[in-house]
Length: 269
Length: 247
Ligand SMILES: Nc1ncnc2c1ncn2[C@@H]1O[C@H](COP(=O)(O)OP(=O)(O)O)[C@@H](O)[C@H]1O
Ligand SMILES: [Mg+2]
Image (spheres, rainbow over the protein chains, first blue to last red):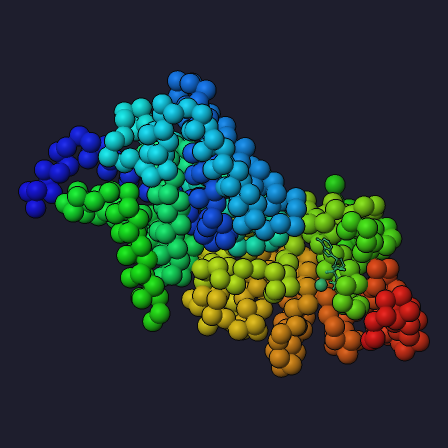
């Protein structure tokens, strides 16, 4: 047990744990709406849009490429919401188009600017153990903002997720709320992507909420459990990866997946 | 300003188009407070669309709807809406109690307060479904779900109840209960009911007003006036002619 205590004496582990827990907190609350609205592919799509955006930022040589990424991802996210709203195409199709275009652009930007290709690699697969102070500060700023917004809007978001029409008859601005949800997803993903990578952030948005869905009787219960699963998976995954000397991002995903399997077994009753 | 004796539902020259298709064409009628209206007509006649105009979910191309003298959508707390069951997400994790409380709070409850619980249980008892309170939605039968949605609509004590085919998927006995409890609800508070139904016999027996709709309003009046054989023949003959629908 002393060993475990010692692990978290290491500054890089402290930063990784803090960042991981904050990302888990935001994304497992948001993930409830992502999963329940059948948007599980959204995290992947937007995370890759963020990848394209950061790659563009690096190519342009701006000081903080995350701002370029934020713009890029917001455009993709609102574009997906718009296609969903205004056409007969399904969300998956809309997300798929933006996903493919973003990755194509990202790879093109990276190839044009060879100097930073290591950074681009980190963007896809994450570098939770190599988080800098600035990225940590960004996450610490975005977390209370997004949790506050999700808290204030939870009742309306849940109502609109249950049945958009019923919510609308009771004065909920269903459409505006959906655009806001997509914008919030973009912000959370951009803030998280440099820390945990595109693949891990997508997992954070889907797996804890999906596990919680399997064993919940209510949406509020699902939200609480999703947060618990997200936090536990992060802490356990980080510790395991340290002792097993394996990549931490992968370990966190696999830990979350193990929770999912347990939940699936319990859900069968 | 609410008019003192404004009709419960005032539909004024309403036309609705979806793309090229004209779904409602110049529909007008007044439904007085306390009446029980049955809206009948074949599939695709625009019945649900008419109710959605009254709920301000659909904006008509021309004309408008008013409830108790005020624009549709102004006072959601006065309207209880029972949607067609096929529209909502059946996998949504929720208890019947939460569903009913959403009708009271007009938002989705993260937790249920004691006063809300009591009101929701009373509404469930009113529809003979108090035992359903702690059940989850994905496990309910069609008839149980229908009662839960009815309790959800009644819990806010609406002056106008709008129901979209509430008897579909409910067995005969339960359908009889449904009319019974709607009439009891009306008798207590003087509420107005407008309900889409396919059952002409039930409409004749229970409704005080009947609207025969197929894009246009083919008849509006008492069941005896509107559901007489020659009137129906006129409306349905036209239907068959226009849309090839056998009735
Ligand atoms: N949102 C919509 N967009 C396009 N067409 C619609 C929409 N809602 C209904 N319709 C069409 O309008 C017609 C009338 O629909 P509806 O009011 O649901 O009929 P009913 O309830 O009488 O069966 C149908 O042909 C239907 O396909
Ligand atoms: Mg209908």
